[in-house]
Image (cartoon, rainbow, N blue to C red):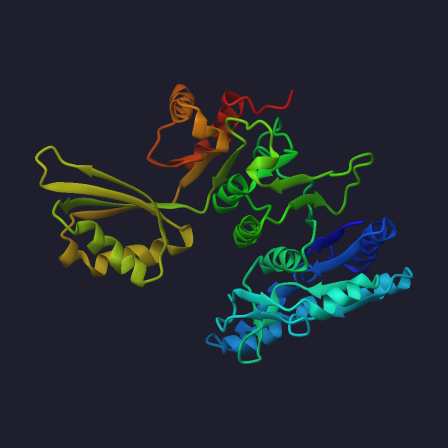
Length: 411
C-alpha cells in the first residue's frame, strides 16, 4: 500500500463523462489498497470564461475579488468528482484550499504556498476516505481566497504530495509522458521512461508545456517523485506507464542529451551603435527591469575601434512593443543609433545532465545547424543546456536535424 496524490487537468475533467472516467481511475488505485488524494483543475475553458467575466466588468479590478471568482471553477470540479466517487461506492469528500488549509502569501492571482496543514486530511485518508482537493487555490494571511497563477494546480498537487509524505504524485494530462521533443513536429520522437528534475525544469522553462515550471521546482526541492501520464490511454502490464521525474541518483546511466525543447515566444532586440563605456549594460537593462520586462539571451559585439557596441537580447514576444517603447524613451541616455526588432525567431535548446561529463555537445549542435544552412543569431548556455536563437522558418528542420544528430530518433 502506498500514499498517492493524483492530479487531473482541465481536459481530463472537461465534461461529466470525463469526470466519471477520472472517478474510475481513482477507484482502481483505491481498490489496489492505496491511500489517495486527488487534485483537480477547473473543467477546460471554465477558467478563461471566469477571467473574461472579471475583465468585462472592469479593466482594473480588485485582485482579491478576481481570485474569489476564478477559484470557483475548481470548487465545482472537486464537488462533482466527489459525487462521482460516491456513486461508485467510494468514501470521498471535496476540500477547498481554505478548508485544508493551504496557506499562501498575500500576492493575489500569483500567490506562493507557504504551508499546508494536513492534520485533518491525513486523519481522514488513513480511514480510507479519498480527499478531492480543488487545485490552484489557497487562503492568504488575511483569510481571503488566493490563487497560484496559471498552471497552479500542478503546484498544488506537488505541494500536497510533499506535505502528505506521498510516495508519488501522478500528473494526469492529455499526453502520455515526456518526449524527447514535440512528437507533432518530429515523428521519431520517443517517450522517456525517466527524466531528472533538472532536465524537466529546463525543458519546462524552455518551452515544453507538459509540466508547469513552479511545480517542477517544488518537486525538486522536496524530492517528490512525479509521474506524467495520460488520462485517456491505458498501458496494460506497466506499473509506471508514463514518464517518471526523479532525482539524478535514480537514473543509472545518463543520456548525453535527453531532450530538445523549443519556444516560439521569443523576440529579438538589437541596439545598434551603443557607446562602449562602463555601465552601458546597466543603463540598458535597468529600465527594462523597472518595466517588469524579462530579458533572456544576451550577446554584445564591440566595434573594431572599441568605441561602440551592438547589444542584442531577447524578450518575450508579448513584451516586444513595450521593450522598444522603454528603450526609445531612454535613447538620449543610451546614445544608440537605432533599434532593430525581430519577432520571427525561435529558441531551440538541447538539454541533458550528461553534458556535464562530455565535451563537444555545443560544437555538434552548431555543425548540424550549419550543415543545413541555418544561421545562429544568439547563443546561451548553462551546465546542462545549450540554447540558440534562429529564424522561425527553420524550426522544424532544426528540431529534426538535432534530434537525429544526438541519437534520439526512435528505432
